[in-house]
Amino acid sequence: QSLCLIHPPSNNNNNTTIIMEETMVPIKGDSGAKAPTSGNISRSSSFGSDKDLNLTTAGEEDTLEYRITANSECGRVVSLWHDISLTYIDPESKLDTACLNFVCEIPKFTRKKYEIATDEIGNPIKQDEKKGTLREFKKGDIFFNYGCLPQTWEDPTHIHPDAEGCRGDNDPLDVCEIGARIIQPGSVRPTKVLGVLCMIDEGEADWKVVTIDAEDKWAPFLNDIEDVEEQMPGMLDAIREWFRTYKIPDGKPPNVFGLEERFMNKAYADAVIDECHVAWQELVSGEKERNVDGEDDEVKKLVRKLSKNSLFALAPEIDAHPEAHPEDYDDDAPSF
Image 1 (cartoon, helix red, strand yellow):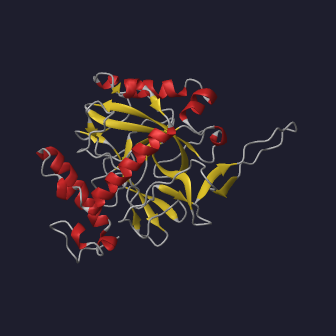
Image 2 (cartoon, rainbow, N blue to C red; image 1 turned 30 degrees about the horizontal axis):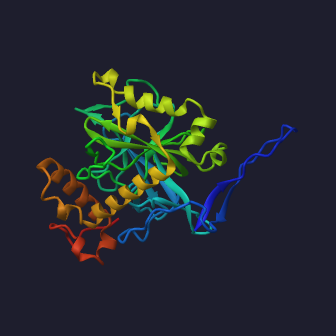
Image 3 (cartoon, rainbow, N blue to C red; image 1 turned 45 degrees about the horizontal axis):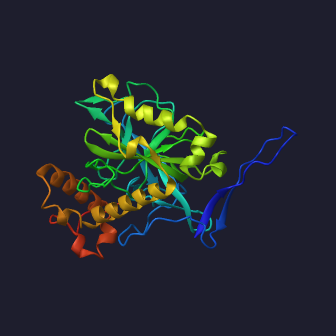
């Protein structure tokens, strides 16, 4: 394994440009850095970074048909949810790092509510809609890059002990990336995990992982949630207040938070991420679908729909796991 580090700026009195350089350093001994547990079923062609990825658009922007799709250099559709590894893999050394991949859905300083279409084959990014109307944040522009961690899933059958008795929200783990770069929808960036906030959104647990781009100039100085408060005072409070109030202009009540509204540290965040990565493994393997009989009909429907789409997307790898095939699995179905 290797550790993702950025050289900090040195003292400079000559007003010359400082070049930030990323260096991959082998992890030695107990550094505290830890990559997520690898799954037993994952795409052999998973992308560990944005290298060799291209983004294409279809449909007209600001319409219900607009989609942003990731493609490999050979033209294969790449799922931004399933085909991007959770762990950032250095494209030169091919080694895992302690950074995680962040898929941006909504760039900072914008308000269109883009999201990964988890129930569509290929999982393109689309603008969310309600009753045929495209959604934007009525509160105004968001001030951080917002997106998700690939290969994670907040299981709607699972109740986290710190989530006020609420189940997962059936989506990948949300991310608030607090660096200076404006990251475009569909872009994949290496990030450092700093902490996590437990939001309760209309009765569902909706974790918000706080990260910073590994190439950001602040990255060398931010290693845990306490560093954010020290180096960027007010940032965490502003993030919490954004999520507390952003639905009020829609006529909804303020959101609430678990854990006494505290941002939890990196170690706690890593545990939440590992839990959601394991849940994703159970989703794509079909194990979760086979074990939802005790859940209510709405949850069963959600899991089965996502599971079947995910299994279809992972079909080349599932051939070696016939026990993971859904009931209506077609051996002759096309793969991508």
